[in-house]
Length: 100
Image 1 (cartoon, rainbow, N blue to C red):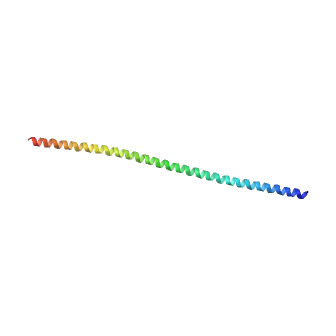
Image 2: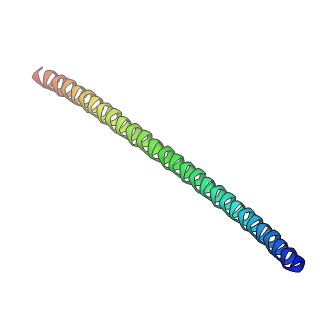
Image 3: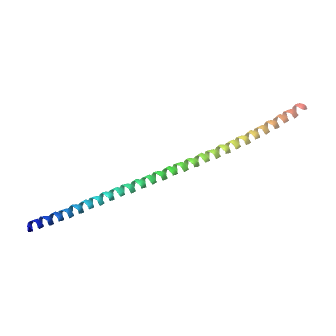
């Protein structure tokens, strides 16, 4: 009888040790999973920040190019007006010179 109680006690102790190791292993695995999840979320957030940065830079570059094109257009129109004015003045001088 004593032997049965001893064996029962040993089994109970082994069961407790097994349960303890299983719980420790589950906790370890849970921690690993949480660490991986956190690392993935941080990586995703960094990737999204990078994409936002690229998008903003592209928008700025496009806006600057639009402004530059508009400025160049205005400059070209001004140069054309100056050229036309010079041509008109030259024609007027030629007309005046040929009338004498």
